[in-house]
Length: 154
Image 1 (cartoon, rainbow, N blue to C red):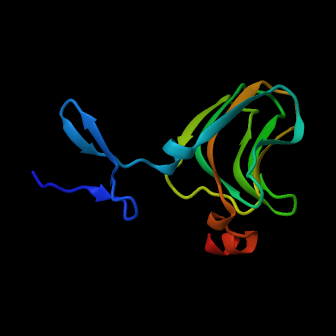
Image 2: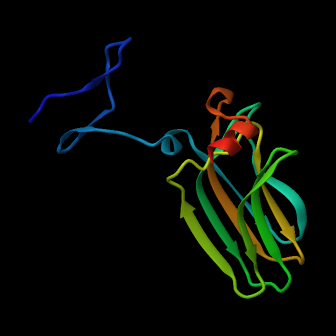
């Protein structure tokens, strides 16, 4: 066995080790697991824009999970997008005319919006029945790009 540990440079305390019945285990955790939160909402009518996740101040939202469930409905459309009031970028769109939607996504890439962009749901066409659950992290301003920088990076 190799004896190795992560040590905090300031406090000199050992980090990221858990004692288990089988011995010590080095633990690494994704930020979403540690700092994430979620919100879910039911939708039964058309909406021009319902904010489902918003950053604090000039921060941004990073998506960790998305769960979508809608019944089939003629003439109904669902759009999920980043929006800051000036710029809008599509995350997901569905036309519910042909079939119901059941979708669960665990994001592993960098699905992070830009400074001040919130996640918005738009229901158009006809009233419907469904729900959206979203997992996210509220990133600080220092970890968030302005829209032009964010758009150029894509």
